Length: 188
Image 1 (cartoon, rainbow, N blue to C red):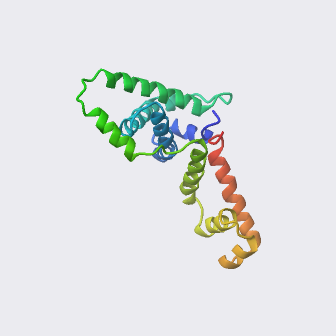
Image 2 (cartoon, rainbow, N blue to C red):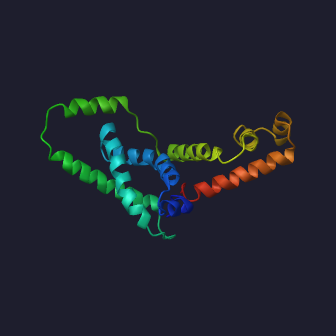
Image 3 (cartoon, rainbow, N blue to C red):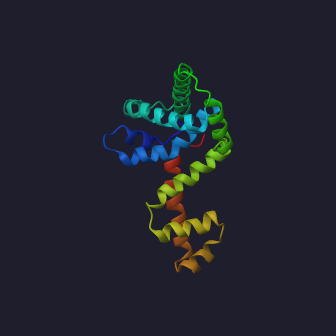
């Protein structure tokens, strides 16, 4: 289960954890969409698949048992693949209208696969940082961002923000520790 945060999964098992569910959706809906497109679904059907998988997860995740020897993303991909197959099976039993081909052509032409694995990792890190930003004071976040992301020297950041270089290093340490906690297992 090294593909999602253990603490997030534990929060999803508790009732009334809307923030945890929102975080989960923010992190995983794009990946489920991507997998749906990989199963041959057009953009509209892949969006429907995301909703279907999330509905399944609302039931399954509260009783999900943590097993450190298994990958959560592997399990999620299996759930998504099975849901996509069921979706395609149901769609194949519907009467053809003749418009499906042109609708799918429009959807394919107007959509681009969201990302490959490397893009997913970048997306996930950026998304987690945006989610976490609310957890820190603006000065702490800015000090870390300027030093780590912009690659500026601690002394230069300290001077700009009117703090000490040590405060920049402490801010970096706090934010990076929290980021690692949030991403533990998310990126394989």
